[in-house]
Length: 561
Image 1: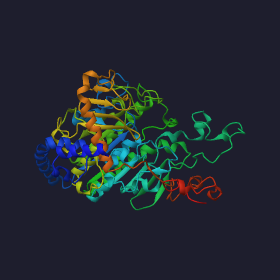
Image 2: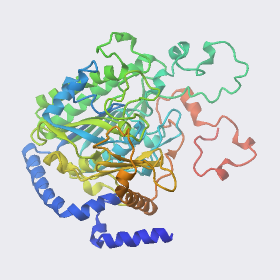
Image 3: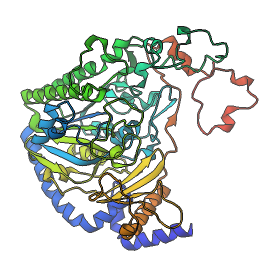
């Protein structure tokens, strides 16, 4: 407590009282930058407000926002045709986006998919929302109902909102996308792994033990209650409406058709709102692939022929169709389109073709290869063409930036930390105008690294006592191959203060310890009997020698029979 009080005094001396009167509560490092650059930012904001007002007068509405995000792709895999020439595939439409807009070379995300998606939805590090761990069926938990998503923020400002694709933020009813602010949603509560939880995959030894009836009797296989046979692939619903399962498993083609259905619905949503002259926010997060290949189109379309590259080419084709549609509808100049990945490549035990294109590491790692992703933005007439941006931007920044563009910042909650900073100036003014030079890197709920400008410190592997080789200069060593000690001791105190300030904010605004538990997959109108079985405990709770509620710190993830 004494140490905490000392830190408080130091911070109080550094910052004026008025600085802490900001209505949106950001992480500590934001205030360090604001102290130094706040006056310049205020001047920039006056110009930005004038430009946005002029655009709204020209187009009659606030700008539309389309956010497309897929899985497991390293920087350089899209947007840089020179690299693609060496990789055996091409994404001409996204490459053209990079020519027509902004190619962000330092977009940071979380190391894996559920945390990144939670970041994008809430503008908060996943560790704050409890969504720091990748969810698998059956999860018995999900994003808390009290989190305020970007869909809820934009809805308050009069936007139409829609989500299509890989949600991956839990299987509790309160965590469904249409119960988290979206007007309409067609979504997968889990990731792509259940695509191989089918009899065909078991028969070919892709999975083991899910369908024991397909092989010889195992007299030692006593407990049959745990198998997640009642999982779902896709749900759909509207805000305040009912939930339905779409394409009930285990019919394999249903998974193959998810993205095509998402694309169709995205286009319909865009056309409908363009016709109504109503601003919209559409999130299309494609599943990209099934782990059971689509037998209806077995021919490969790339020379690379691996699952990621095959998927990227398909996503790229839709991006081209979408951009063309925006032009035909006459709304391209009033629509911000962002395409990006959710984390680095699946280099550890993943499918072929997932490689370290530029940076070290991949999915799950705190190294640059795990958390730096391709990200391209276009907004004709507003984002200047042909920009290659070296500024740091974080996935949480989209939340606050989208709210600023929509005139919806008043609806961002003020009772919690919002990590996302407004990057409208970066979009409009270009390279060098980011309002962030830092990232806190978590793996699960473990604070693994800190980034400050060109420097990075590895906290995960730091030895107690004398500091070791745990410092990196990302300009001279972008692949983090040569950790340094003596050469970067001058950064040690900077990183120490960065970490202490960050932890201090957590003391004031505690994190949720985990995803909010609950009964899985409830509220489905056309629920299958095998799904209903998941609601109930596989035993009689009255037969237990103790009351479960006495030893659990949350509600049970099932109901009594």
